[in-house]
Image 1: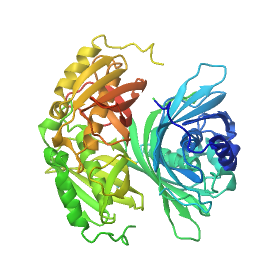
Image 2: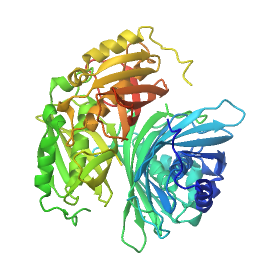
Image 3: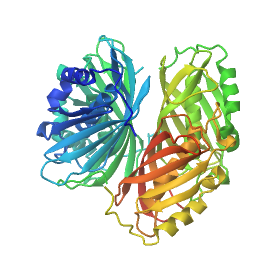
Image 4: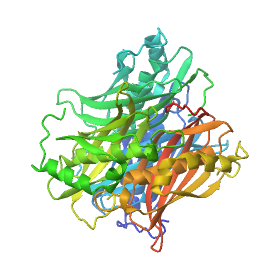
Length: 154
Length: 154
Length: 154
Length: 154
């Protein structure tokens, strides 16, 4: 459905990587970019015991973190130069316990827009066991002129 | 509206604190419990530069983490003994940039249920500047018999 | 929290009523405006058997309809002249069956914005029985220059 | 992904049609079932001027109504006999104005569960013009023993 989407910034990949490198939360969690294409970004996260909930599964907030960033960067691939993207809101359904060797958050643009872009992320387990869909997220993302002193959700 | 809600587990506070102590993600973020009452739990989180997004604000996933835990433990205060709570889904609106000395996530039960409990969290900035509402979250939480080997969202 | 919000359009009430009168869906459902104030609009809906789900309760889509309009018009009270409001997305939790003589949807602005406004609606039963909170909705609403030929969510 | 899902009720199609026939709201809107398969139900809705918002597009509540029913019946195809399904919550993103000759809501199970089933619906325009994705909905649905005197969301 998105075959015709063309990035408005030829340097979209460098821009995603540069912004990602400034997200200290991603480095702290241990997430890394594994795929970038127009309208789509995938992030991988190894399991780590310091980000768990009470039963030893990865905390929903950690899963939400990589899904949110995957969706934000998916939106960023289609945004014009000199803009920044910010999540306005997201909703996540947790479909199975976040247990596994690692996790893959696949963010994808459902509808790009001048002001708002809507994305969906699927989060899967990775590793030697069967791949399981553990979460799905719908995000609304605002595209705005870059201002490092930055502002809020609108 | 919730004045008549009575915890079904007299030891609700100890149970919340015990479960919270097992959430390594909360310890890693630096969150702590500041208030527990029937149907309501507040968590405080200091700002920390290692959990930020690209503009130096706290990452939405870190904000979502404390709002999710605040809502889960609010639900837990009204749950029977020998049960565990798990978020099925949540939706968060990010209302202002997460900049401040610290953050307070106030989780509150909107409707308790035998199987499902619905909670809402408000997240505020704390510190010497004016208190700002930076996020609001609606969560659906399932109450289930405790099983440490645990399972998923339903 | 919203005591200082001042409508940017002195004719905000007339504008809400005029727009509401063009929502044929509200007339078809039988909804009417019962309260308008800066940042807040309440809609009343009588129960009607032709808008039900399989068990004879009002359909969730009918409840969502009045909550969505209540939130949209709450946002509209704070918007500048010559603008229109459109829901970008909403999330609703259905807390109890929609059975009763009537329903009241109370929409309220949580955070007004130049581009995006976030609102929350609570839907209650009305009539001779005890008032029950049956639903809560969080909405993201975009404020845009009026164009009757109109367009979409962004 | 759902190729192995087998309906637990061999009469799943009859049961969906019987329940749908009791949803007066669907008849009032003019919706009809166009596709039923394990884990998937599609509903068609013609445009009608009496269900519109202020600009003459179909009201978001009408779109939400058919998406909600499509998701509920998709869940119902995988539920055991003598059970009923109820939406606990849903979130919808409105991607484009609901203008067109008609609309198709395609509901699909993302994850079936004993207690909770998560579904996603896509709503498209239909007719002589290009098909446009106008909305996407994520729903959480509870499966419960049938009781016509019925109850709420949990």
